[in-house]
Image 1 (cartoon, rainbow, N blue to C red):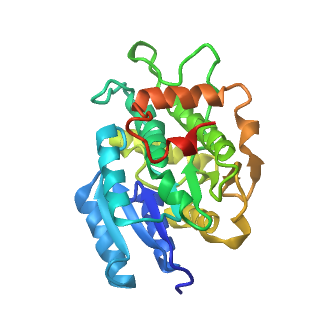
Image 2 (image 1 turned 90 degrees about the horizontal axis):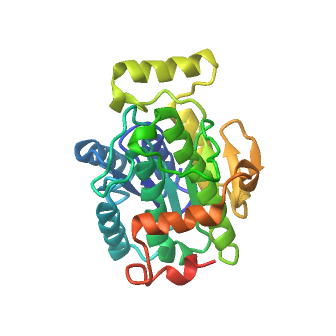
Image 3 (image 1 turned 90 degrees about the vertical axis):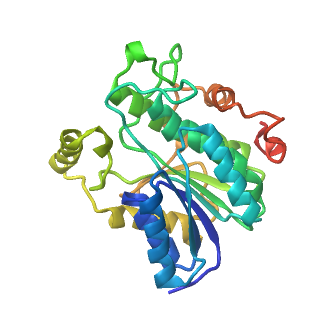
Amino acid sequence: MQTMSKTAVITGTTSGIGRATAFGLARKGVKVILLGRRQDAGMAVARRINRRHGEGNATFIRVDLAEPDQVRAAAKTIKAEHLVIDILINNAGARNDEYRPTSNGHELTFACNHLGHFLLTCLLLDRLIAAPAARIITISSDNHGAVPKDGDWELPRERYDRRAAYARSKMANIVFSSELARRLRETRITANVYVPGGVASGFARNNGLSSWLKHVLSHLLKRDLSTPGAAASGLVKLACEPGFKKTTGRYVHRSGDLAALSTFHMWNDSAALWAASILKTELNEDNATDVWPLIKP
């Protein structure tokens, strides 16, 4: 049943929660811009949505969020075709069992889970602020962890630990969203975190079948495993329901629990993470002229 005419940008849409969310939003009449690394899978999702809901309701853009040049190119393509974006869902995520650097030398888990979404969000802010009431939702995890004040968010090769790297990237999602909500408090944009809990998806398959099976088994043992569709249903509600129109700076769990984002990062400096993210993504007044006034404190 179509109830609205809005446009949403969703990352990580070739499988799992992102794919289910794209279908869920399309059912509500939302036009979806799908971002992902796998061209064939992404195009297949877009074709299926268009067959069900009409041509032009879904488009796919290939982008590797760990590569800032690709993120900039994707943002440029989106902005050339859309003056308004109503919903941005920063969903894509990965965990790497071994240290892997990106082409510009950043640790891959942190670059994909945080830096790519930070850059994409900042570059699309002018289109979001043009909407009547835009919503930015970033997916985090129960497995987030505090970052020591004397440490770095991004683990180096010699100290790499897959669990710590993933936990830090997920805490970065929380701290980033909290700071984003604060900086946008005078606008009509809301910024929240959604935590889906354990999901039976392809997460961790990039590390091999054994790693994926361990991931699924751990959630089965905790009795915290849902389908992508069930996890996406809460995300779609947060993105669309009128009751969440003014909700901002919140940590929203699939279980229905809500909490202030600030309570989850009392040991971390949100301003320091923001400054580090600007430096690491090379975002400055020269290459973000349209949005720089919006993201200054």
